[in-house]
Length: 426
Length: 157
Ligand code: FES
Ligand SMILES: [Fe+2]
Image 1 (tube, rainbow over the protein chains, first blue to last red):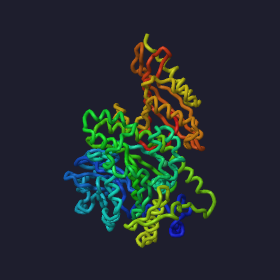
Image 2 (image 1 turned 180 degrees about the vertical axis):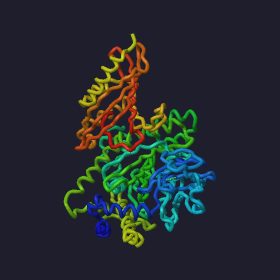
Image 3 (image 1 turned 90 degrees about the vertical axis):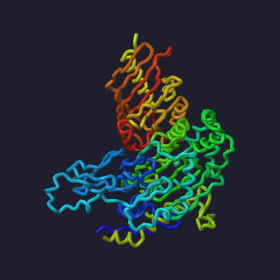
Image 4 (image 1 turned 30 degrees about the vertical axis):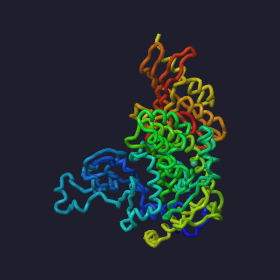
């Protein structure tokens, strides 16, 4: 019998044991306690534009199909045939009226209902098709963000997101009045634990160190904007593991400060837009193109990160897949969306000027944390001056580890709650 | 006389050698001022400007990339990965006196932090003849795994 690790002995308010990144038994517990119990982000509304649209993705290790049926209703279905378990769909995205399993031809509807099986006579009276749909998960959407969960008793998504909802609304102002749409993604893996990435989204402290070479490649004005570690930004615990890290307070609300001068790097875009749009609209679009000034970390697997969605997927205790999904204005000017694509390529992805350096740092954490026994990972930055807002939310300076503490607080709740303990005992 | 396949191969081999031996400044001079170095994601894309790529480098971005590789300020390139690349299966798709399009296979091995990794790609070169010899107007590196999850690539493909 394997002895299960005791999560409560591994994570404290201000520190964690290094083994949280490399204990395989703990990882298995996390997959059940966290990825089976919570709302997990699966798609953006624009990935499923019309009836019949679908994508395939994962919830933790479980392959799923996200589909929009004829009536426009969303379904999240386990990608597993009810006959003998084959995946019924291996396309990344597309449009279909049904999912037909390639093995023996069982056919399912967009809502997962089993419609037909070949040669049904072989089953006599014993096959009740109504009892064998693709297994359907609970699904909910907030402002274009689609989440699903195995947990039928979970709190409503609205409640789970809580104060994070306001920040999602602010983030979506990058549509500049148009709906936000996804515009492709950079997908890569790094040889390290998923929590290293979860932490990084609320880590402003590393920016001027790890991203020196990115900063070298941009103009002075942009360097100044990214010079935020001693600025007025903050990190705030939003509850349920979520947090927001505001790096550039002037860019919280993209519809404010519209009379601020256009940054030089966007002047060319502004001039081009001026041919088709009035000055006020031009400034709104240009501000939106520059992205939001904050990272919103939505525990456990997605972040609205300045100008893109960052989605993580644990592959193994020491292997994580990350997607940096580009976003743009659905119906907005092509020239502005193209500028967004170029900005995304500049920093993000396996060949960007930012991501490879992040990836190197995380790789080092995974390797380094293997050294020795019982040595802590520190999570105490900014704790001394951490304070409470009227709402009760904890907050501290922009480089504080408040966001990581928020995530680990929820991590501990997830791993130590009664149902988790019961499941582990089974 | 049209640009010959041999001329093109000689030039492409020089480019590969400069990249594997870290002579990035010399590499920069192989491009036309309007030249583009493109690593697409979508294998079916044709309008790269309108789609997300891994890299879509004009002259300024190529210069930045080289600065990053040589500057010693990017932890993923301190030192840069070492690479060995081989080209073969050359085919001239179009050629006249002033320009040509040639396609070939590229097999690349990377070594960094004790890890060996492999990338295969189809590479298409749009070359133009100038007073200073052949130059790259477009180099499109279509990775076999472009739609799969990659790992950090802090060098030039
Ligand atoms: S496994 Fe799907 S029809 Fe048999
Ligand atoms: Fe970073």
